[in-house]
Image (cartoon, rainbow over all chains, first blue to last red; front, side):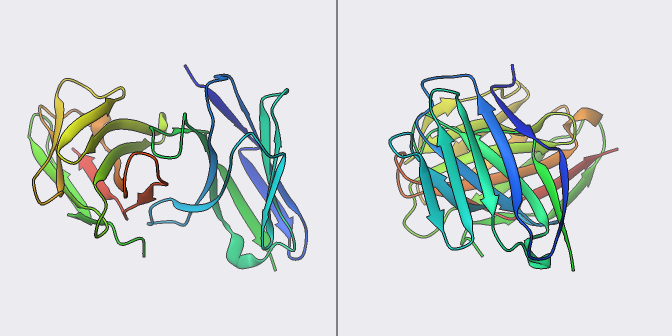
Length: 112
Length: 112
């Protein structure tokens, strides 16, 4: 049973634009929501993470928005750059060190 | 570079065979996780060890087994291999079960 649904599957954005990736979860016991970035041939790398006690977290050009009542969270990439072209995964877990349940992934392409 | 190392990088074998994947966690990390990434199943949690003890188990097949050794490196053993076992296998580590997970570069397994 897929517990974290991610959309869109693929996204094409122009350089300087805003990339938005959305995720929805089912399990209300989830308490930690990270985003991972994966380049071809590499392992997922932790980008940014949020806990449900805050509605937004920003780190540089990356922002997570969290809506606990809707059980949804999203990643916003401001001023998207060609170097941001990668696959992005949302995930959820009970706490930061517990098993991660991943979304399906979004392949982001930022055109120069 | 996350500091997690995995060997080998690539592995090609035949159906029915047995292989061992190795993971060395980041220095000081006591917790090790194994994940499988395939086209049809996405990124899925297999198993977690903490300081040598199994801590959590996901949808890991009975043909698969793992262990964490006293020096904290971990091995994932896959036996009676089937075509469907072809995937990327990632190891992640964290200082303890309450901390963020950092992924290694993965081992690409191809079963012919």
